[in-house]
Image 1 (spheres, rainbow, N blue to C red):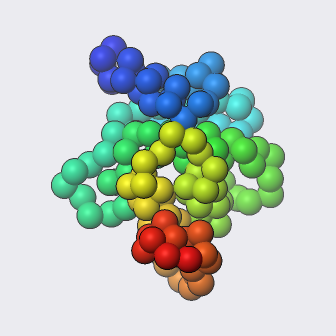
Image 2: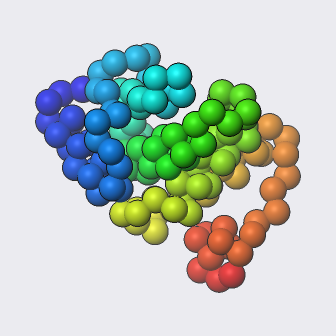
Length: 139
């Protein structure tokens, strides 16, 4: 990522009120939270892909950063296996629910990502009132 990209991402980190000291840019193989070292590596895959229809690809950088910070980091040390569907579901769901500074669209894509993670694992999810409110505007 360029210096301009990094400066932009730092404003996105500030917008979600995250601790900027735990974000490492252009390190690691992809964007992700590292539980052992309590850092979030940020790579170019943090940026949305406007040509994809998959919710994970369409999420804004802000939503992805919230997924890592409020989703994964908030549950540091839990027993959910790394990269398991339920760990990823929880990360997107909780980011949508608690992260400050997200747009309605960010929250929608985070919920859609959570649902897609469950669907990919063959798990049926019953929408709760928060999910219905985010996706449909009604509880």
